[in-house]
Length: 117
Image (cartoon, rainbow, N blue to C red; front, top):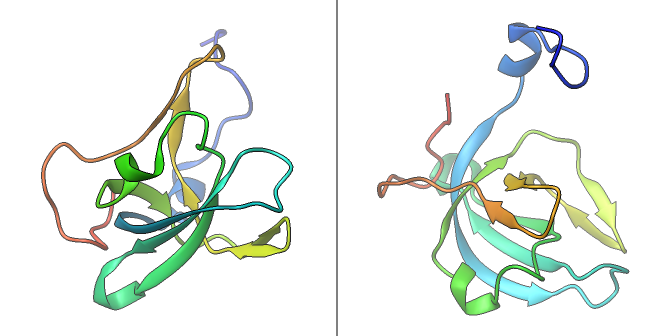
């Protein structure tokens, strides 16, 4: 396993993350941010409700493509202020270290708030 990058995480550390499916309800530009970012309103269902999450995906996604998209997010991170706005989670995405970022989504319709295991 000499080709692993970074430190290994234990299963218990991974299990602490609350990863859920959410539906993007609203998208606004985050004008105060230094980098191109959006303020996303995401619905995580009845148990969690709606959250505001700041995401640096603006160069790859027009607003209209994000509305109603089901995305995968971490919902139990401490809130983090990003250019004066508190972000209450993290939208997960993959990047190829070149010019492509793509959101992690689900391949079938599933209820908002569904746990990712």
